[in-house]
Length: 109
Image (cartoon, rainbow, N blue to C red; front, side, top):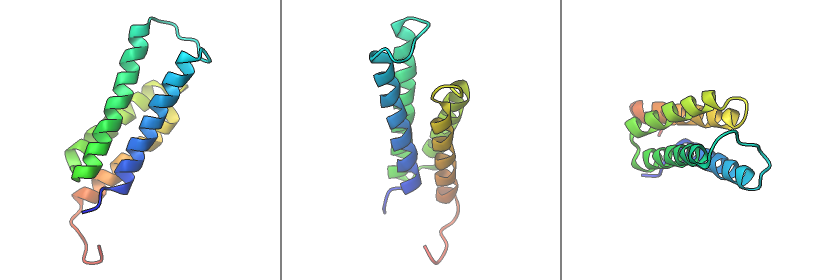
């Protein structure tokens, strides 16, 4: 069976946001009001949710895709004024992927 394209797209988008976040922080293009520990935790969460979405897409796991959607939605809302919008879009991709995996297969699929 092929991996879920929408789940992989959600994973790729959240992974790209994680890389962009780290590049902007390291280059000093974005001011950070806090210590390096906070930046590391946010980066770890971004990478973890990307890996969860990828695992759900490859294994066709509804719980993993749903977990990825919840994590992406939470971080998207928390980071709405910075990195949140692409994360919310990735969350919507993960939700659609989970619903498609949950639905019984149609005869045309």
